[in-house]
Length: 80
Image: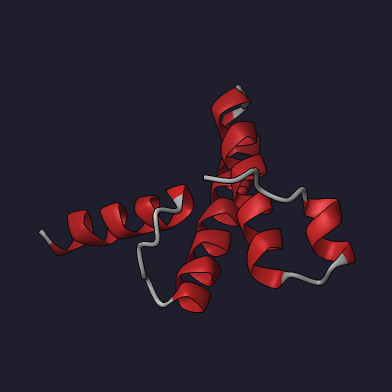
């Protein structure tokens, strides 16, 4: 997989999908590092909303993208 655009670069180019993917990666890292339950709740909510928007834009297609793979894996576990 190629290097993902930064949020700043995606915003400058107005690449919505790449911007959302960069945001999701940043939020995931922030969630992993967060030690405050109160802050984690807000980060998790933003992450979930970002992932939902990515799924809407991609139509849930798996094209080898790590973010899409997470979305599809979560969708499969929800339907079990």
